[in-house]
Length: 250
Image (tube, rainbow, N blue to C red; front, side, top):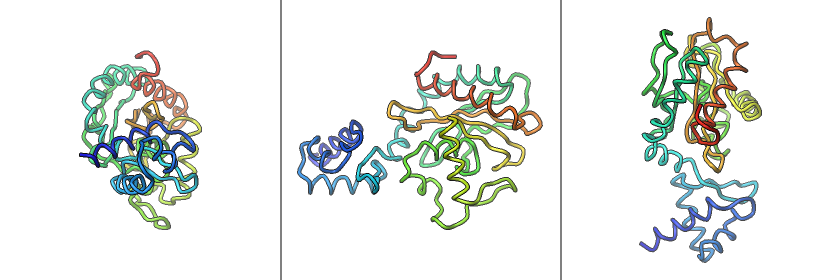
């Protein structure tokens, strides 16, 4: 029980830490533990992906594993609160709106709202490739850098899997796309997972800026053309903020 209490204390300290306060020494002091015990517990938590270590800064942050756990524990409540927002988004965009979350380490669509009479194949319950969808690019762009290789599942230097002629298979090209995603606040997909599916996605972020879900608008290229990306991207960003509770519900 003592080990569990110490691990919980360290997780709380990591969650509250910013900047240098995230170093092992500072975390040991914050949790009231000696350095040896702190290092041992942090190493175990990192192996379980509950914390992430930044070698450049020497600091720890909460890991992707906690997002996975949170998605499974609180997913139903988030889906329920998101339904009205998705319906409003679909009506305004004239395309299908969807919500994706991490389930068992995979990005999975958990809710969707069609746009009136617009007929489209459903994605709910489907798992998607993170590098070949706007949904996945958002998750990669807003995740801790140490978690990105784990999410991709491809060793550095290897090509990413190709699904269509438009799929990004170069890691360096993907990194540029992720930087652009962070800059504008949403990601885009030009038929990279399925040639017929184009879309935009925005992150639902928690108070610490971690992605807990992703909002998407998608449809066929003949309707969802590239010139619509900026406007649809802003709609997705607004919807994600509403779901996160940072703005009033749409």
